[in-house]
Image 1 (tube, rainbow, N blue to C red):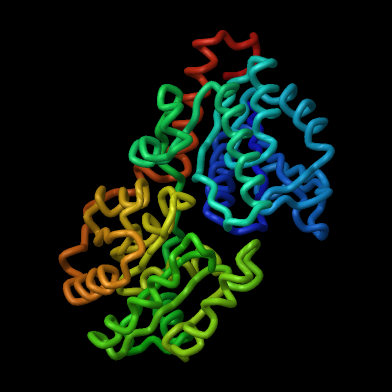
Image 2 (image 1 turned 45 degrees about the horizontal axis):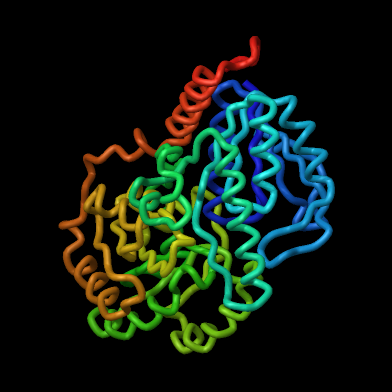
Length: 391
């Protein structure tokens, strides 16, 4: 089967959405499908076309940016050409270009599935209000044209202002999660590299972005440090030049600087380093504050490494802890509750150990890719696929 994936940002941009689509694309290739990614050339240094991991990537040039979106004059031409030459469309929201892509899928009778990763929340400026309206309009048009809409959890779908209007089309497929197992020696080397011997380690794996609620972790730390004077916080992920988050980073910089070496930015880690990171942490934290966070893939990664999680009680985000009982859920934007939960988990880690849970069976990229394939086949059967399309 030939599958077209469309989204605004793909690798090397790092976000939960790009990690999701890369894992899904490579899983489809491993299962024998031909996969093309249609995305933006958001960085002029990127090639217009290349193949990575067996996935063909096509990047039309970007004329201008609109907040976190982009304008690509050639996107329509590419969308028409690629939709006609592929058997199924996997369109990832939010993106400005989704309506045209979904309309082409509908006109060509290709199974067309939207994956809704999160609600959009932009800083409250006049321009961003216009941009938000444009994206909401685009999402609505795409949803009407698409055959199905994939959500990570029913919890998030029922509470999302957008998805709740299309529950009849919503199909739940868990997100793809994979962990490269770091050997004990690699974990020990990681701990030595960052001077973690004898330290109590709290980890956060994220971009330094406003929706992640980093300020609430910073506000919770004094109480946690009082209980654990040897506390060190490791922040794994992009923390410099995060798209659209420069002012947020400047606002937090004095508070982070005041912590000295108790707060360490690690930058973006490779998969094996991420596994060592999770294993080196006593607990990881996801204090996200709004519905731009719909799940938090890093929670499952942490749990696969045996490390409990403290997460905010957002719809969708609370589901990994509720599913596994490997941690605690706290109210959104409540540093006192966050501190209490971190202290409780750090004091009684054995209460949150669940070694018998096989998360890979549900969240492996292969399992997720197969679930999409079944959905494509179901749509094709219901609407009548053109002969010979390989579905």
